[in-house]
Image 1: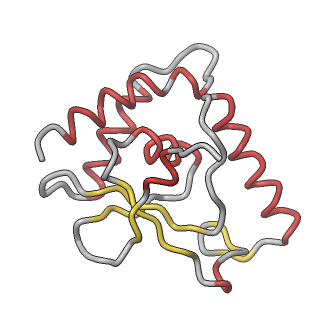
Image 2 (image 1 turned 180 degrees about the horizontal axis):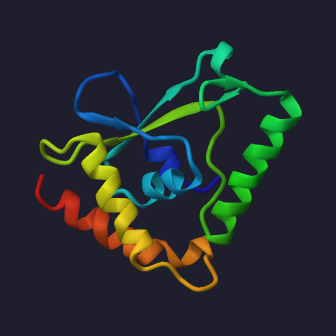
Length: 136
């Protein structure tokens, strides 16, 4: 098996140095594009594995949602995200969660392509993350 960015994730041990991802498809691109050494993951407890946005969903709906995420990532050329984890990125120097998401979301939305394909989000997202992490 080839190593991927997913495989480089540290074990999440808690703390204020990490920003929890929201669980939307764009977040998985953020994690995948974050500079090496800046991502972590924690296994989801079994009771949370069949939830999205805190609400329980059926096994078939969960599989469909996960498959949709995998397809979104594949369109961007990113391998499937390992399932049953909560993902985190290291907090850029003193940045609040909402400021982090505002900046990375703006990088994508300000460069929104006409075809809205996720592969077009990688370059502006990569630039924004490189800038954020260059100040560490």
